[in-house]
Every structure is written in structure tokens, then in C-alpha cells.
Image (cartoon, rainbow, N blue to C red; front, side, top):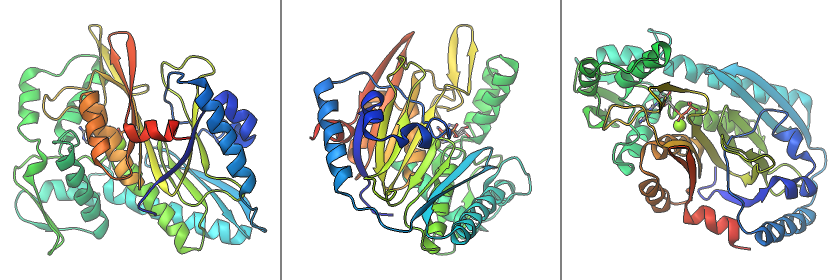
Length: 378
Ligand code: ADP
Ligand code: MG
């Protein structure tokens, strides 16, 4: 994947329909829609962007013989979709099958639903001694710790004990007991994960720690699946694991993949579309997984510092050079206060963020400069 993601445009839906007929086909109908809301900015800018989109689109030559293929499976507890362009059905099917197998393999390593997964075994054993782990597990944890460092611990793979309490709270509709929260917090902290790249091993400093890679695994899996497709010579593809999407080269004749975004607060007709290639885009949000207790709404994303389900964030969309980063950053920026989240996004090369935060019943959007410049540079 290129190190610089390319966002070609950011369009309101009404203009997009005039620009690219495939919008609905590739997004809404096929459930590729990432939900997010964006307030209407300056309409003349949209018009200019759209015209530019048409102009650039018209200049892109159609490579011959490239056919579109689409596949999906339920994996990692979500709908995984692969859209790719290939010259033959046989190649397309072989490549997609290999990509799905790669995801399946990662799920087996990383799931917390199976006590015998490599990740769960690591949690049990690594407080006693350093445990050598597979390259994938090492990479996921290494990338996680990297995101923890740049987000001041807002992203933290050691949140497992807290996540378990908030899952229970969603089930019982009762806040976790203070005593249990305190006990769980004592077992959380990314600095307690000691990763040794030389030996490829992990040691956990506290017993009872539980690693949870739910905030990064789907992005990593999407990136890995895309890499498998590349290995089969497929250079124009999209892999979507729920709201975590990795894209390579644009479809033939297009300047990028059209990815619609919408939010819980979306006014009718205010869906937006991102046109992307060679990057990752992920959305985290509390639209589906949250619990409301005594009038307060708690997300399934937990603030590792307070131990509480996040209350202020509605949705966060992050574009990054790869989807592992986009996924983890979208989770982290859901935890951080929006302005601090924007700072993090701005400090990272190739990262753009759109944060929709709640303030009571009100929603407010925060747009990183890079995202703004994509929106206004033409
Ligand atoms: P989703 O998986 O729902 O699309 P995310 O990518 O934001 O959304 O991941 C949320 C998951 O990440 C939670 O279900 C939990 O497993 C894990 N998680 C929760 N809080 C944090 C956190 N502060 N840091 C890292 N992972 C978290
Ligand atoms: Mg995430």
C-alpha cells in the first residue's frame, strides 16, 4: 500500500449521483455504507469538487478486459466484502478465496470467543514468562502499542477486563460496580505489555491481564486480505470488514473507490461520499453498540483512564495510509476529547479525521485540517 493515501474527493450525495451512477450500487445496496454525518459546508465548493471529479474521471482511460467481481462472507463477527477487478473469473475466485482464508486464519489467532486462540493462550501464560508468538500476533500488538503511544493511551489493547464489564452492563442495563471497575482498572495499561521484537515474544507484567484486539483486528485483516489479492496480481480491490475498509488501486475508469458516509444524526439526503484509493478508512461509532443507563449513553468503546464507556463520541471516521492505523485511530479518537483527537490526526502523516461528538442531544463535527484541505483544495 502506498504511504500516502489518496482522497480524491469528498462529495455530497446529490452531486455524487450526477457524477457516478455506481454510487448506490457500490455502497448503499451492498452495505458498504460507513455511517457518518457531515454538515453541509459551502455548496459552491461541492459543485467545484464535483465538476473536478467529472473532469478527472473523464481523463482516466478504461483498461481493457478488467471485469468486476464481488464476494462476501461472514467473518470476524461481521460482513466481509471483497470487490476486485480481474481478467478472468477463475483468477478472481482463487484470489478472493485466498484472501478470505487469510482473514479466517487471523480470526482464529485473534478471537476472544475461543479460549484456545493464540491470543487467549497468550493472556493466560505471558504473565509467568515471555511467550513467543506468531508474526501476525506480534505485528498486531506492535502496531497497537504504537497507537497507544501516539494517543497517550487512549487506544489500549489491555482494556479486556473493562470491556468485559461493559459488555455485561449492556446485557443487564446496570452500571458496573465500582469495586469491580477498580479491580479491572488495576489490570489495564499498555505499558504492562513487554514486546521483544528480537525474540518475537510477549511478556505481561500483571497476572489477570486480558488483551482485546477488537479495535484494530478488522483493519489489520482488511490490509492483509488486500495484500493477498496483490500477491495474486489483483491491483484494484476493496476489502471491507464491516466499517473497516482497505482499498488498493481505483476501479478501471474511476479516480477512486466511492465510499459513502452517513451518521446517526444524518439529515435526510445528507450522506457524503469519499473517493479513495491506496489507503484505509475506518469508522467507529456507538450507533449500534451502546447502553443507556439512567439517561446516560455509554459506548462499547472504553476510556482506559476512567474505566468508563465513552459518552461524548458519536462517530469517528479516519483515513490513513493503511487500515490497521485507520481502525485503531478511529477507536482512539472516539476516546480522546475531540480537539485532542484532531491534534493526533494532524500529527500523523497521511491521516485525516472527521469526528462527530455528542453534547447532550446536540451533535458537533470536528474536521482535521487534512480532511478540510481535501474538501476545499479545489
Ligand atoms: P467496531 O469493532 O465496533 O467496529 P472499533 O474498531 O472502534 O469498533 O472497536 C471497538 C472495540 O475495541 C470494542 O468492542 C473493544 O473490543 C475494543 N476497545 C474498546 N475500547 C478500546 C480502547 N480504548 N482501546 C482499544 N480497544 C478498545
Ligand atoms: Mg477500531
